[in-house]
Length: 174
Length: 278
Image (cartoon, helix red, strand yellow):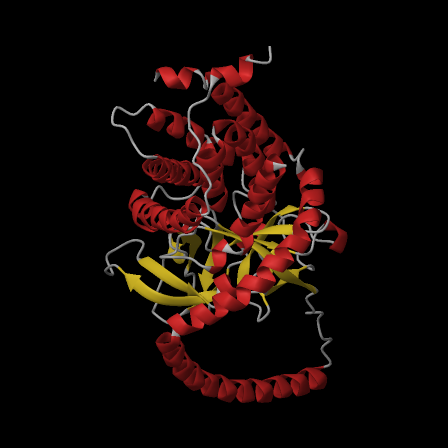
């Protein structure tokens, strides 16, 4: 049931990405709602659902926006990996700090990958525009939206999940 | 890095899947599935758009009220000028008809078949500007067809078609290239490209180009018919010694807020390669 709810949330995020997000640009940039949803799934349900939903979200958004689903999948890959790296960070971090850092890093990587894909497809290699028009405002929007989602969820009593992939979860049933 | 070893199988599988998806997208294997998916999602899109578009409209109007006032004043003046011009044109047209009748000339067929379509999606970022319209191959839309605003200004071309939806790459997309010319300019043509930030520049443009000139499609290359209005020159940078001045063009239509567009059904593009069109 929880899995279906997460799938529905990613589905709605993909639709909102092409219907709602373009209506509210900030400095020309839009939020990455699917990416944000994957970060929230990873933060509250752990890496396994995020690992399953990452390709699902990429394919859904690819079909809705006519973007290359493969490129979107590559752009979303760092969510899980960054979460795992932050879990073993040398400095102990709170769950909120890990979630924000993961979203920040994943947002930067995802937008850079998508921009690189556009440049390879013929767009001018405008690095300055990438930073000023894409990365900075985009990450700012992501942080605002994450706060709007994360804080109420924590206040509602939802417990944060660990970002580490537990071996036992896979091998216990074997 | 040790922790990532646990994910190596997954990362490898996802990279492999990404490559497969990239190939499938290029080949078009996913197009039928995409058509079904878009049909399934259409009620959800309509719901979300219905809720949020009015909100965005109110916020946008509130934030741009000074700009809108200035624009309104400018448009009033422009409207008056256009009305005068229209009256003159009507007189000219009447005069031409009378002369044609006197000379016994047959009137050519200048009708353009256009299909109205609603914008249902928008994928917009500084590097990408693609809209989805609610018309597809079932309505006769094919890849490469030209899309204009309801007023007839160029918006983009169709890059992918499903039975019920089509994807349109707008002229402000950074992958867009349109052979364009200055209306009335002798030999002043170039390649109109989209830039990050949704601006347009006329590259490789030679000839006498001035601020305020109207840019139209040049009709070269077969991707666009001649004479579709695109925009107005807003700045020309560079000295007379420069081979190619930097020409910035403002689109005639507000691409970001268009809700209805027209697909030019009567024009069959000669070049269907997406790399040469918007």
